[in-house]
Length: 313
Image 1 (tube, rainbow, N blue to C red):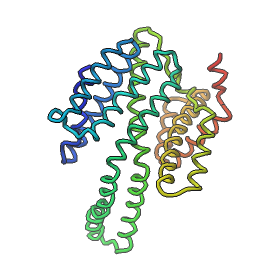
Image 2 (cartoon, helix red, strand yellow; image 1 turned 180 degrees about the horizontal axis):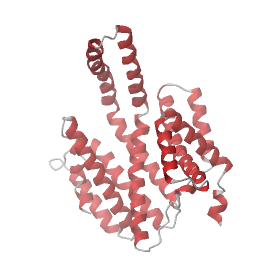
Image 3 (cartoon, rainbow, N blue to C red; image 1 turned 90 degrees about the horizontal axis):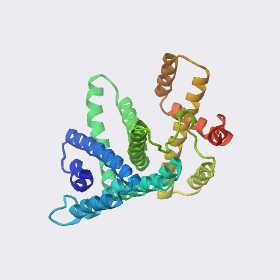
Image 4 (cartoon, one colour; image 1 turned 60 degrees about the vertical axis):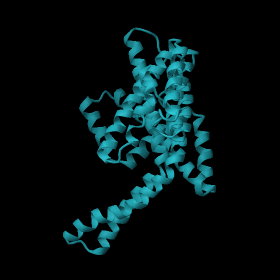
């Protein structure tokens, strides 16, 4: 539980430096520590060590909240603490109560998304300023080399505009990207916890074989509502809808890959052929992502693999 106690300090590491490589290094360290903490919390709650978990988490919160001991302001530290502690404890608690893995993870992921939105709400303005500064940096990086290579002004401006479109898209979808990063942390912690218990020949309600992963059909109705909102509203709600659609399509894409893997195995294709197929899918970038997402979306309704029957039987 030392990670929970020292959480106020290692989560603050990326925010204490301005040198970009150091920020990336400390960010990676904090990300790794948070995954380890989530694993420990899930296991401890499953095994009924609630008092130990609450004591360690409370101690970490006190160290991060008391002036003089705290590294970050409470307004910045609280969402980080909630993000690291509550989703993992929720996941362990629901698994302990006998919930299915998918439902338990979905509830924990909702908490993760909520706390990440709290973090984004505090840093969104600063990120917007950085986006504005990015254009001048790009102009400085692109204009000189392209001018020296003989490109005309129109070609240079076109290149800059294309890069700015990509940056604008990334900034617009940044909340969704950060949420998926947090959910990815939680998923890695869950998968490693499952691996630990199965290695000990202990029962653990995991997600099951990847080839049978499937998005529930009811989520189609949520996607439909979000698409309607996206078409009817503007401003902040439009951006929120875009990020929700991005998150849902990412989930559908993962399950679309499960569908594809299922059929590739049924065809008994050699591993090399499957690797070449996935490499080609990767090089398709956005079209590849859309194709797998659409496959997952249709499978959620038509159930091509008969997952419902497999689950029941």
